[in-house]
Length: 552
Ligand code: DGJ
Image (cartoon, rainbow, N blue to C red):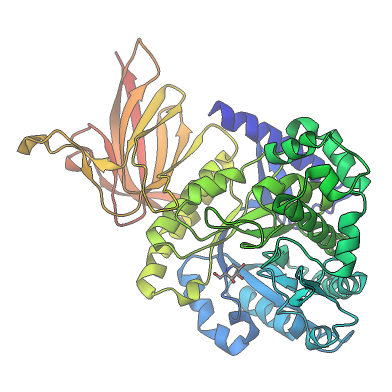
């Protein structure tokens, strides 16, 4: 809790620094709210229950017809939709925003907000969404090259022409939004998509080779000097090991090898992204973020998109791209907790644009945890329109809980009145079911992810609890709590020696309907084992409202 508070206070400072002095406060923006950086829409904190469309869905309005009702049934309030450069600027300088306008109109009809994803120069490290006139003109729009000088289907980040073309189209998009979205349907923009370099760690084009041999730009070394004490350890160590050099080549500064190649590539791609983002923000100041492709263990730069906004490159991205408000992870592996915590930093407001390839119950539990533990302003499953219906239903239940409790979550984020609960899972899929403790004032919740021992049949070991586990606890009064999630047993205690016993006065299941609590069953019998614990059932997402007391 203490650590959370320190991070939260620092996040507040970071967010305050981030807001431009003359920002139009009616626009969607990031704001510091009691220690958390939240997304403000029309001046009010807004919690995104997101859905990122599968890449190609938004390219056809007809295809989308069946998708919107699926998203609405999932309690999605924000759709993350690609804005395809090739569709927006099919001929150089002639813009066609019909694909964008269709998404905006349909989102409005379904009372949803939008985050547009700028599929510009990079899409999963490739340049497949560049328009034909860019793709075909290799001379004017040079490609990144491998070390054997062969060309890649990736625009070189070292080309001024590439940058100018991308920037021009992005500015046109932002201008179009400014002129046509007085309703603030669009709340945020992702700049490029999963930037990085594959299959080598850096661009080897002629321009890139020259830049690699030239001195590391002063803008970077100045940043490193200024932030020496807070740099990511690997970067700090590489720079220190070579004498904290200034004005030397990349290899002289950080050493020769893949790690330095990746630092270089991060710098040139982040600079490019910054120029695109800054030009777009100058026209229409919406919050902007970049998303990161994470990797499997043991992979080296180039085997994954090298130079993306990855944890060991945070400093490079912050130095090069101050217009980017957030570095956001895309989560597709079981070790969600491990990766997300690596992005939890005071200077990185939290947004999860993509999560997928995991059971919906696990994703739902992770989503609930993220809003509480990471102060996430939004969480978004990827391509839910292609999930089997029963999986979408599970996600709908989780988002339904978030929808009901959004006012309470938003009010508690950044404070010590909220705690996220989840079960960390390793990359190999092994769950750590160790019990976890959470203190709220006088009370302690000892959360277990296994069922109590069936003593009546002579066994004294806890037994596995099927399904996913996790959710959150929100304190709503000195003795009152809302508990939401799935698959948890909560044993109660206190922090006091004078009054060590915590009892359950009432435990009610129920729902918030139009913001009003409508209780269901009173659960003071078998469900709480006659007051011994609170049980958040497995196999569904639910809300419980409890009142506790403590005594000697
Ligand atoms: C991450 C990318 O950002 C998305 O556009 C999409 O390609 C998914 N991967 C597919 O899993």
